[in-house]
View (tube, helix red, strand yellow):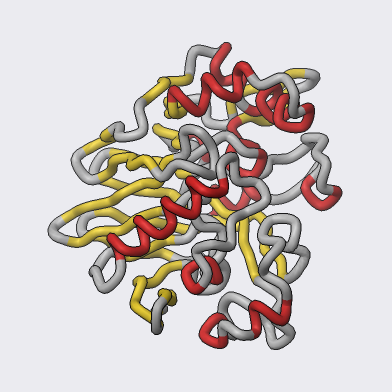
Amino acid sequence: MLKWRIGDVTVTKIVEVEATGGTRFVLPQATREAARAIGWMYPHFMDEEGRLKMSIHALIVEAPGRRIMIDTCLGNDKPRDIPTWSNRQGPFLRDLAAAGFPRETIDTVVCTHLHVDHVGWNTMRAGDRWVATFPNARYLLGRAEFEYWQAQQENAQQRTVYVDSVQPVFDAGLVDLVETNHRLCDEVNLTPTLGHTPGHVSVRISSHGEEALITGDFIHHPCQLARPDWASSSDYDQAHSTRTRREMFGALVGKSTLVIGTHFSGPTAGHIVLDGDAYRLAV
């Protein structure tokens, strides 16, 4: 279990799934040969064969008087297209409680966007119903993001995700629709990082002169620091997501901002530094 301290704020990583390889459906250009050419990624972010290492995890942000969960992973009992993600029976809630965060103690849930691996534990099965996993939390969802997926009917799998993991908390009156620059508290605010989805956000933390950024999926893997043009196959607008990566990397390079990757494995966090005409993650 990894923890980081940013001034008065603590961020804790709670892992649901870690995997090596099988990532070509997300980053099709990141072949083993292409990945091996980015030597600094070994051993934290790829293995010797060039297979990418990735993680699905939640990040618990403890700010003064607040306990915020950023993204809620895959969840249990839910039918999904990817076999290893479908009808899971994982120990995520037990792991969360063992780390000191029983689900009843979470006061805020933030979804950087509404894809399957970021909303799954919004809800849990209770008999034949989906109920809020975090009953004492307000669920902060981007207004543009919510409205887009609410109206989306063509993507059957994403519609299933919306129905079992988003609609129930909305119907329960637990959702606050917010703008992409919403401020949660003095130390934590959202910032738009569009392209992966129509309303995608990242999370900025600032306290006592120290800063961190929780990425969400504007970057899926550190290989995209070396190759910002490697857009994800799941990006809503690949040209926009590539532009966002270039802008964000340019703004963060050489800064003291700790970058915490939403899908980064191993050390998960580091600082963006120049590497020739591209970038790398210094951990």
